[in-house]
Length: 146
Image (spheres, helix red, strand yellow):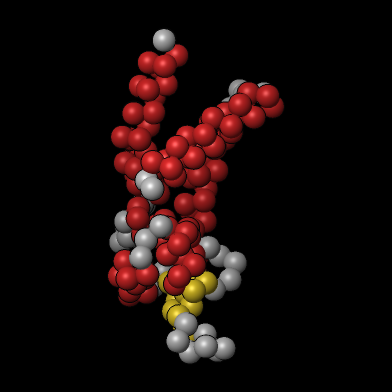
């Protein structure tokens, strides 16, 4: 029962603190004009290739309408570029501007540091167990929200 109590305490504290901690680490002077949610939109767009609005909305589990509001804001601030598809002019493609790519890299660096800190001192087998536990937790959340 001690492990149950410890896990409960750690998870509750993690969920309570993670957004605040991430925001303090990620939203620096250079990126003070965007929110942590904006940073997650930037992360969902990614650096590789332009994506359509539906793909990004699905990644973030939001409606295209909700995403449009965030994208309008990020375009205005210079983080995101918006263009019509050459193949189908009805399709809106979004990509990161150079400023958006810098924000993406900064956010990715925070996540890399967080993962390294999480795995510090764990051997291969312990890492496998942690991954399995996190997948179980993720599955619980996915099923819970249905």
